[in-house]
Image (cartoon, rainbow, N blue to C red; front, side, top):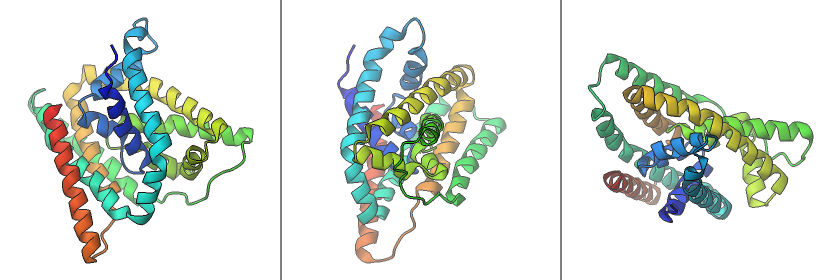
Length: 269
């Protein structure tokens, strides 16, 4: 059954995936569709693939629409209002934590091993803040070696996208192909878009099966890890703060709006 609201959910996920440091998986958790999203991607290669098609089509359409139409807007915001833009997403990430903790509590009692996996997840993601992204410009040639690099970069980034707290865009930055991917979207470079898209689809299918198994087998451990990953991403997204009045006020307003949006969506979820 087609649920047109999934287009809007996909647009929210697609918008977040354009921004380095922000995870589409985090947004999926926030909107209460993370488990369904993982099960649908994993199930698309099974005999029951037909029942997952409507959901994935709506989500995919929303993500593609956001990436193709909002990439210019996101680029503009990150150039002219980088700190308020990132503070909005910090608010979103911070606002989702109470929802995740409440979900984890309903799965069982929190023990030492759960705290350990939470800390490991947080440190793993937070450490990415110290990684220096490759600052090369967009790769404009379409040689076979470039296309192979872009395919595997898309596959690795998509595996990160499925994990809340780990940004696929940030992984592309670390590899050094983020400018190339973003440029291909804004200039409609179809060969590059198709190659990266094929890599992303491959990574989605392979990693979703592992995540689905772990969620079903060790739900509380996985939610502990997810909470840690989401918490750690706060350090990656934090852009610093220039202490001029207009920037501080705008950043605080963005932070508040993001936090309130996350709390509202969490209650609805």
